[in-house]
Amino acid sequence: VNIQTQLEALPSTVKSFGHLESPFPKILSGKSQRMKRSEIMHPNHGGFFILQLHDELLYEVAEDNIIQVAQIVKHEMENAVKLSVKLSVKIKIGPSWGDLQDLEF
Image 1 (cartoon, rainbow, N blue to C red):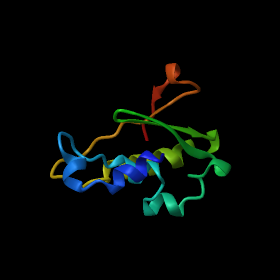
Image 2 (tube, rainbow, N blue to C red; image 1 turned 90 degrees about the horizontal axis):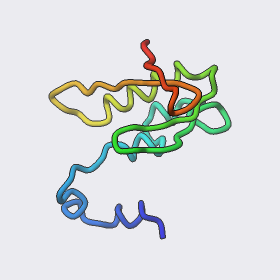
Image 3 (cartoon, helix red, strand yellow; image 1 turned 60 degrees about the vertical axis):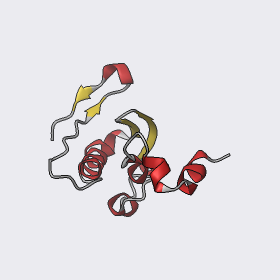
């Protein structure tokens, strides 16, 4: 059974009871306009979503596209919801989860 379909069927009062609804699904599914327009956010072109762990997202990205994908993901994460405070997103890159280094751009 598709969990996403079940969650979408729930009334918003039930979905939001006890927690905030996550802005991540729009980003993860690639439904944001910027991600739709970018061919690199596709498995055949270098960048695709692997895993969400709490507030962290893991993408697998071709080396040639790291900066471009990082800029898109950072922008989409920081602008996923409109708040009165600025959201700050840190980007890390590396060959494995244990070898991640901060990416400054």
